[in-house]
Every structure is written in structure tokens, then in C-alpha cells.
Image (cartoon, rainbow, N blue to C red):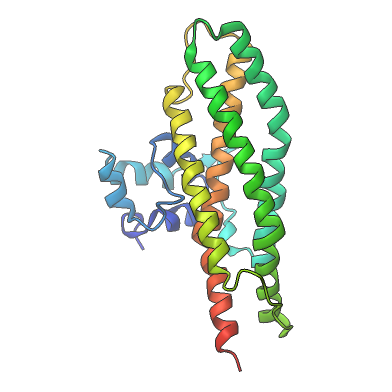
Length: 242
């Protein structure tokens, strides 16, 4: 299938590295993953052919990115989300907020955008921590049980929330809010472009926010466009199996 005919979610799944390019152009491939690539790009005033070629040619370390997380099993995908996304947010939280406080204290009077970004960042990290705990304690165990049922026929335990669609719906609401906040950060920082008088701490602050955005967008993509549809299908299959 041509890249122009794929959805944004399919493009990011098929072409690892596409997420960074789409984020650079402000294209939401997470909560907007069901949109057609060409339509979404034109909606942003971009040429789908040009951006598509950039994605196909994306290379890291001199070679094409070839790790397709969509090929992971459900359990491998959850493990990846926990180890490379949840763990990343928690590891970056304290140092990034500490850096934000330092930058605001020294440069906030001349650059109000630093203070605005720091305030937004702190609230978003609080929300992300609560979101991750809900996934770890409620949603992921339910998905793991469904995967176990498919693999071994083990009974699916009853839950307090009924269908897995219910917590998924709540997670997707959280994802939309986080995506909006990340795009606001990108706008506040002019696409993470530093002012002319920026010091090393300011540069580290912007880089930290940029990498957090990159990591979180991939996290949301993996869940919205791969894990959640898979979980709904596992539940559907479990319900119709005799």
C-alpha cells in the first residue's frame, strides 16, 4: 500500500521514525491516527508526497529503522510500554522539573515562555503519573488476562468495569488531553527553538521537553493504534468462543 493511502497510525507503525517527522510538523498521529495520511498532511498545508518521501528515507545511525513494534505480541507490547515509556517519564520527572525551576528562577523575568512552559509541564507530569497508574493497576492486567485466555483458554476474571472498552475510553480521553498539552508546549517554545541568549540549562530544558514529547507521542500511538484495538478484538473473540 502506498504511504499516501495509509492512515497516520499505519504509517507510524510501518515506518519507525515517522513519529518524529510528523511531530515536527505538528501532525497528531496518536489520537488522530485513524485519519488518512494524505488528507491529514494537506490539512496542515503540507505536501503528502514530500513528507512521505522524508519518512521513507528516514535513517538512524546510517541505516533504516527496522524495529516494528506492531510485530510484538500483546505481552511484549505491554512490557515495552512499561519499560520504555512509563519508566522514562518517571526517570525524567524530577530532573526535568528541577531544571525547569532553575531556568525560570534565573531567566523567567526576561522570558515568560519559560515560566509558562514549566507550569504546563508540571501539571502534565502529574496527570501522566495518575494515567500510568490506572493503566498498570486496571487496564493492563485486564488485557494480559485476555491474552492469556486466547493463548491457553484460562478463564477471564470478572472486572469491576465490565467491558475493557470502558477503561480504554477513559485512557483515550487522557491521551487527547496530554496530546493537546504537548502541542501547547511545542507552541509556547516555538517548536523548541531556543532564544538567542539561551544558556546551557535552557538548552537542556528544551531538549528534555522535546524528548518527553517524542516518547509520549510514541506511547500514545502504541496504545491507541495497536494495543487498544488488539484488546477489543481479544475481548470480542473471548465472548464468542464457546
